[in-house]
Image (cartoon, rainbow, N blue to C red):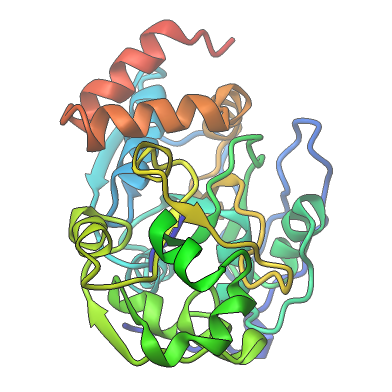
Length: 309
């Protein structure tokens, strides 16, 4: 958030926009910014992007199809890559809209953020976004990062918390997407906050089939999955507790360029956000990852059964 996430765009202090925060009651966090353009009265077309994992592509398709139903032309640039890549894309105007996650967005722009409650994280985002970017309503649906091990590994080493890995990390191999090695929500944070270091790191995929197979084969003993993935429950994996909060709350939130945030676009996306749930999202992602349905087909089916008005 579950994610996922190597290009880090420099953000000048003068580009930081302080926006007024609101609660979870339906009004988007908003504010026009001259440096990034004012919010228009009408938008005829926009480009939606996504990260390189099933849930992000699904959410992007839901956003796209909901907007298309309003007569807005939507171009798609899905599967861009890790966060560092798609954040660069929205800042250079290659895309106008992304499905994102509150905690991940906050720490991307402010690595030393201290907020760790869902509402506080959400309200802190506008103050760190660069000019021309805004977030709309956060959803109740959330997808958290999770450090997981097999039940056998947890039993063998008496693992309940990430901190328990400190005493045995030199015996264990961690694996996952390349970003898992460098992020605060991954090995960098585990070392900084818990003093955990591993014998080796194997570059695999971000919560994907390669990491799951390696975990089950005991090629690796520790990896990162995401809490909306059915693979955790289906394979009896153990999620290690995180008392130091290297994983922040990750509610779903649209990240949009101000110059494409018309009232119709905002209200349509906020209506989608209001209907998303964590359990529902988990089921939808399973249809893609396990059932091998396409993201666009799953999005179309969900929208056909979910009135947004």
